[in-house]
Image (cartoon, rainbow, N blue to C red; front, side, top):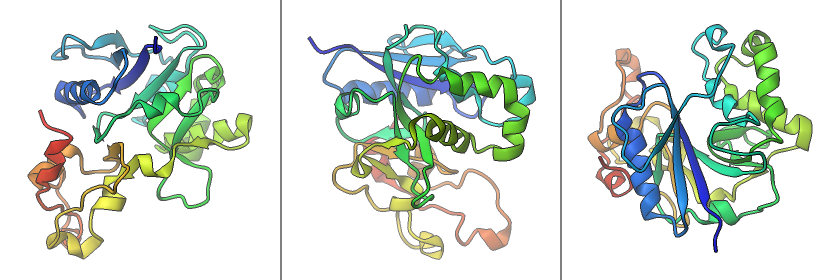
Length: 257
C-alpha cells in the first residue's frame, strides 16, 4: 500500500485568512491519488476545514528578536516537530500556491533525498532556492533550526528578511548544493505568467506552461488578487504603470473559495 503522504503549511498573523488554508487543502484533495494528512501549524485554528490537522506553531524561542523577518518557517526543520517522528517526510507548500495538476510526483521523486526545493527563478546559477514548495525529512535538517535559534540576530543582519537565502546557505553547507525540483513542475506567476512591466496595463497574465503542477504566487499578488485584478497595496503614481495586474479569471480554475 502507498505510504501516507504528509502535506504541511503554516499560517501566522493576519496576512492570510483561514480561506487560504482551506482552498489549499481542498485543491490538494483533488490532485493526489494516495492517502494523505494535511497539517497546518498556526497561531489561530479558527475557521479551518474539518479534515485539516491543526497544531500550534512550533516553538521559536527567538521570535521576539525576528523583527518581522519570516523565520518561523525554519522551525519546521526541528527533529521533534509535532505530528512526526524522525525519518518521516513531508511536502511543504506556502498558502499562496495554486494546485494545477496531480502532485503525487513530489512524493515519489528522488525518495532518498533529505531535502528538495524549487530553484529560485530570479537567482540564475546561484544555489538559492525558493521555499514556496519543498520536501524535507524530519531529523537531518535540525541543524538549520538550532543554528537559527542561537544566532538569529546575526542571521538577520546578514540576510534581512531573505530567510530562504539563509536556508539555502545552510543546505549548501551540509550537502554541497540543493537538490532541485524539475523546473517544469513549478511555475512562477509573477515571472512566467505576468507580462513585463508596462504591458500589464494591456495584457492579462498568461496561463502556466504545459507540465506545471504547482503555480507559485510569490511576491505581492496572490491568487485572490489576481482573479480580481487588484494590486494589493497603494503605490506612488509613478509606479502604478507597472505595479498592476489585470483581472485573471483563469486562476479560479486552480484557486477559488
